[in-house]
Length: 142
Image 1: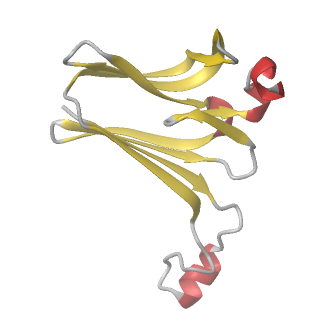
Image 2 (image 1 turned 90 degrees about the vertical axis):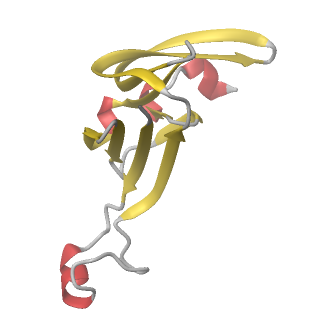
C-alpha cells in the first residue's frame, strides 16, 4: 500500500460566478481556486495508515544545537507505519482545516486536505501544518 497526500490552500477570493460565466465553471489564471498545493507521495510500502482527529502531534527537532519536543493538540493526523518499521505522519491543525478526504483508491490511500485561506499557518517540516496561534511560542521567537 502507498499513500499520496495533497494539501490545498483555498483562495478565499475565488469567484464561482466568474468561473461559471467565463471559464465553464473552472478556475483560471486570474481566478485560481487554490493559492498553492503541496503533494507528497510516500514511496515506501506501508503496513498501516490510521487517520486520527483531535489528536496530538509531537513536533521534535533541534534548535541552536538543543533538542526540543512539543506536543501540539487538536491535530488531524495521518499516522504512517511502513513495512520497514519506520513511522511517519502528515499532520494539520484542525482549526485551519476547511475539509478533508481520506479514501482508499484500489490498494492505495489518498489524503486530501483543504486549508482555510484566512488562517495564518506555519509548516515547520514537509507535510506538517500548524496554525500560527497554536505554534509553540519558544520556537516562534527564534
